[in-house]
Image (cartoon, rainbow, N blue to C red; front, side):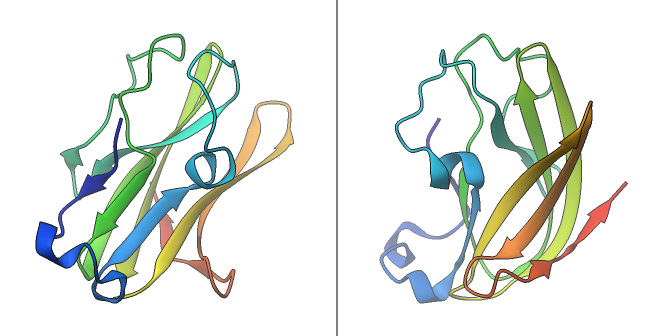
Length: 133
């Protein structure tokens, strides 16, 4: 699926006017295929608006969720879904989007059925926003 955007099409050329939210799946592995059996980190909801498949879309079907979003500045809540074969994890975050900012959604596997998910500023690598339950 292509990226999600709430930015006016005429503003897309000026990256300093909006925020880019990108998952590590999109950034780190641009040549991935849906059948490669690797985990994905997808954007499911933005401000309670469904923008991707939730959660009944299984890993084995083609991904219908964006992994990149262009957002106008403002306050956002975002729901991410980490997919692995046969399982998934949902994580919700709150953050303030600033013009020209790039935010990366990252994960780290820390043990059996344990995963950390966070948002960070791509330039400073500083954790931003907060996880919401």
